Image (cartoon, rainbow, N blue to C red; front, side, top):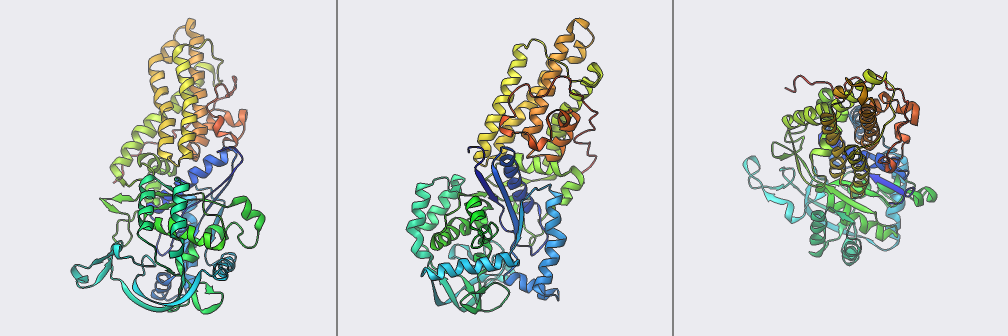
Length: 525
């Protein structure tokens, strides 16, 4: 995308009924990395995350803990969800809570607009409801229970019995938007990504859409329906609207015009809400649909989707306390093909940490800065005449920057890291082949030694910039050790799309001592 354009990106709005696990962390650092990349590219970037705090599940959890729903969500968000952002080094621009007044007022405006346009009607509803999903379940997600739930209908996702609900509700005429949605998917083939997610959505909509119950009358923990305060707005409608209420819908038209529409990154289990119901709601209100919906896969532990109810949830802090936040971010964003399922294991994490971070990137940085200090009194030397080997490194640095940017445009963070990591592998091989320690023993090779070490230092400058959205702490440490902070300014101020241009680290820059970027980890048991 051209520099300076609006890039508004969102995480799903998380349901804080329990503490966050690494699946939540995975989504959040992915969105943060994309936002950091675009922010550093000069785009008008805005990253939103937040919490979805209404609904029956939250009401029941609060009652079980003998507190009000508001007290319960305040505790969960304050003790677990706000701290997660610091733990993961997330640089979000806003955090919205659906219990905030700014959200509630704007939700009522939006729903009133749909009602005024004739897209909502009153009716009666009877269907099987999953409190865990906060959703009336489609037939495809209703299965026969086994074991203690034999004879009951259970949710395919939660494996818990469904409740038969009979209520007088308000309905959104979702069925009327089937053709318009199919036209949207046809005209904007990248609206839903990856391709497997798009195919799933198109197939679902082609089967026919049923009107959607958008209110509940059996409980009152939610936002009141503006024309009938005996009903509260269905929690999913309330939640989806956060993406527009956070950027001024209904109250700040200038801000809304600047930011909207957004890119949404979601887990594939909530794809249908974001790629079918949400654009239909926006069409009904006369608001532009999102730019795109990207569905990533599940994190699997022991072959199962991450789940608190099945005790497979792992808190991000369990990993970060051992390996650090940069390793967490790097591992999940590089080891898993973004858009597909991926398996997590402690063994794989430890192996990649040692091979790619400690021995690969970390050792490269330590060796380069140490040799500049040892052989050139800590001052970046001037390169002499470049050989083919040096020019190959330069071309790879330039290519990596372009390839990584193209991959980030497609939300393929793993491909971007792979493109950048070519520089790490190339440089380690380059040092082995050129043996600067041997060159240092011969005065006649002084110019060649300077060329090799400048090549290494300048490549590390480019690596610091290109990897900073992925590993902000380690790259900032390296940036400072290279003397680049003094010579070029803050790392986050470096134009990322210009990172591959050769020769930006000035000759004469003072290099500082660098502690290990990725210290040895003794045990992960």
